[in-house]
Image 1: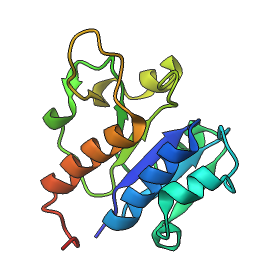
Image 2 (image 1 turned 90 degrees about the horizontal axis):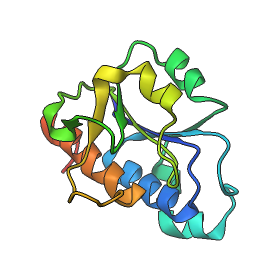
Image 3 (image 1 turned 135 degrees about the horizontal axis):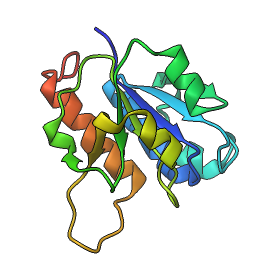
Image 4 (image 1 turned 45 degrees about the vertical axis):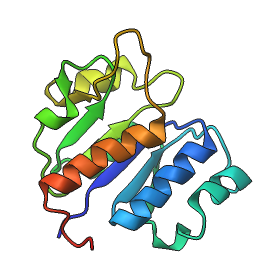
Length: 155
């Protein structure tokens, strides 16, 4: 079974990353963090949000998003952005897919968005709403990908 992957590009809020790490732990999803991080990996809020699940999370660190793409070029990448035309439910997520999320204050850069224009996805919201919490967004999209794959390996 090929694991799904969540990529956080320059995350800024430790509690969000900790919550996402916990979600990754309970789903067997690999977490990829792209520097710079807006916090220390020793941050108490990061640790607290992840509770006692840290030993269940596979985490990899990168210096750039390009490094992630080059290391995993055989996989599909899906970019979460409020600017996307397609809903996250309109995509078919293959095993091993990478679900990519930007920093809380700015989202993904235009440069990153241009790298996969056909795989940009959004979560529907009321008109005028800026965005959902990063942890919630990651969980919503991850669970759709898991659902499509029959929740393989999950009880």
